[in-house]
Image 1: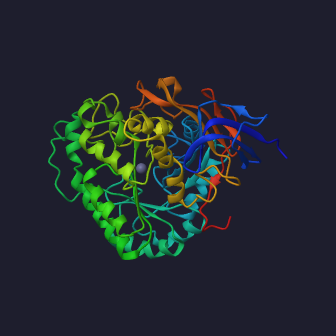
Image 2: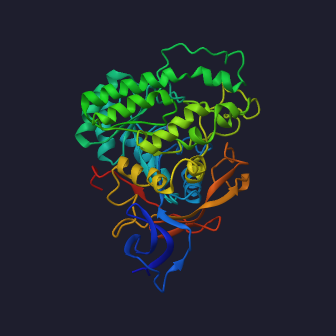
Image 3: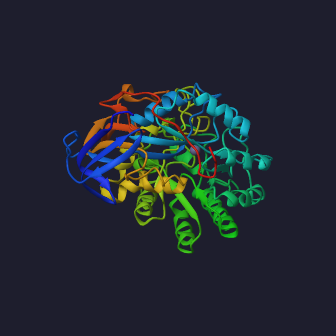
Length: 447
Ligand SMILES: [Zn+2]
């Protein structure tokens, strides 16, 4: 038996309220919660103790593209950012996670590199319907697809035909279909080809209409099959009314947005600075204010980073070419601080905390052991100071590459400690205990 550990705060997140409490844990599990400070407790004062943040949308790229990112660096960055569980997308690793064999290769590659917990998604591409059930039985937390070219040739996009084949299989296991919602049928009115370093030209090259059309298609499919459908990284606020209506009609539809769509705005993104390139693109302030409102009113369920880094050459840092650069933002470490910085003036902390904890846990169907502080739940905790700001230096970034639009920014929400399965993964700016994480399997798998 390992010794139990206790932490006390004046502001512990319990049952939807910040309140004084000591949380005790042993063997990776929360064993006691008391409404006062116990003698053996580490006292963190007014710092918030809450469930570790959950990032349901991360591209780790290992195996196969480890020069882009890997399990070792990504999970250290997560721990430094107050995240205790991340879920890895079926691309951009190679092989892509569209078969059981590829999933097993990924699990093997992750061995001894998990400093936070990691779940996996499987992928839906043309011609792998036969593989979905194997992936689900092996414990993936969802199945992801693209409705437009993914940027990775091994992961082609699908259309309604393939999704209609997949949805009855997913329904059988109550596993969500996650969709990258852009359909490029409307002609974009952009001069990006002749003006490739201009941000406004890049923005115009991926119009809101692409997203809106794709979201409408996903809502139709959700309505037809009555099975969980999830819209990843909503950027177009024009898609929000349709999402809200579908939810009001009782459809099992969920949606996320990302910190970069909330914190940055098209009006101030510099030309030739491809750190900000992602798809769908970061849009204008008025649009982004509506995304914030949608997080408040429940139209959007949670926030995830869509961490999708690439090496400097592939990110076209030198050329600043928005047409050629990899579309993806490196932001894993800044899920909590980036989101809080963007929302703190418009949202209460009580409204904010579930967006990174209970809500993603519920979406992933892991809320019986993660996303809340309760006796018997996993001891996944973060201790942080919402009022404390910090300046993001290159040296403080744990991602494989220190290239991020969050660099040289002042953010609020300093992480002082991250506890993963009862082990101190991160404390006082340093990784403390390595390999604290485990693989998180779905409940439909028997492992
Ligand atoms: Zn993504």
